[in-house]
Length: 576
Ligand code: FES
Image (tube, rainbow, N blue to C red; front, side):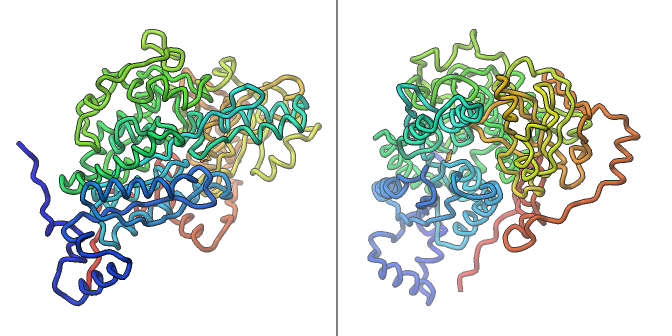
């Protein structure tokens, strides 16, 4: 049976443009003011292009051009395109962290769509938080929407060596601190590591989230692997514009696509990619907006059954450009058909199974065969224990295997300033067996849960050749980072979680296979410390951060705001 299509008078925008009343007169006359005539909009779906371009977001430098290409597609398909700039949330400049502003962009996206005559939306994002934020807002609004990922940038280059965003910065910065790299080489790397517009080209948070959104069904097939500078990315932009117009007529909405099965597909793909730990927080928040229950145990269960196949930095060797030439995400999905819900419907109206049909792997060094995975399990593990009663995560495919099971004495830093002050102090009582602990770096404590979780190795240990050690915090870690870093400890230390009670010299036990993280201190001593513990003042008590601090949830709940979770309908504005 052919699905019913909307009629022009059923369009949401008809309330703004189609009536014979004073307000509609104003809306029409002001649209003419902008140079359009009734032929441009009458009876056509209005498509909002939510564009996260700004001069402060180098990853989205091509988005003004791409927005024009999306518009071309919208016009071709008989829609009326309106570009609407939204918060850019550029990862590189914003302090203390863009995570503090993810929910602000999510709210902005929801309200922009709600307040305007919009029938459907193209979501243009890519740089880390822009992806979940736009998805969260559009899911709450639940009008037809499709995501256009910014695409990864080209490979970096230094003296003939390939450089990957983030991952190689951390690697060579350690060498620089160890005294093994001179200033000239360091400057050359600065010139060569970011060669084009586009997002980080390692399997960091941007690539993980774009891939997860494609697996979720919210992009056109193959969208997440397409390099930003490839002409195919322009074609993708126009095709996305054409498709959203049809989605409006079909009334295909985010919550029709983002089902429980679709989220399992997204998590499974993130695990097969060895993706970013940040995906856990973002996918939980996105699922909350879609009315799908997704928790940490779900991630761990899916990780245990999913082979790690994508040989991409930071867990592997190659970069996103190589992944694209090897067949990209569609090819990777052909390697795990039994682990995916093949019938899940996607933005083009077809099933995941239809979208990957015909895709082939052309380089098995980049996308490993199922019978020879890079690791039998997915890239992430969820840990629990008396140090993290509500959970913590670790990217165990990107750490030195000798540390998978480790017990060592804690060296505690009360906050990031304390860490900066003392980490390279020659007198710091630290050895390669120590466990570095960072407190007050979580959603409330920092605030915003910055990517401080890859604590720097103390300089004196770097000079001894140490390149990895166990580190624990309630912070996040860049998706491009690596190491034996236990992250997202919940509840966080700022609210009195057990991490707040760790003292120098306490033994801490990490056992990834057993999914365990424990503080080996007698219960009565822990109780004594708890009764003496005093909360700190909120770091920033005004403006947006005051609102954030009042409503943000803990890491295991996705750090969404308590009043934005769930699927309560967004009220339509009165038009008077
Ligand atoms: Fe923009 Fe990494 S800094 S994606």
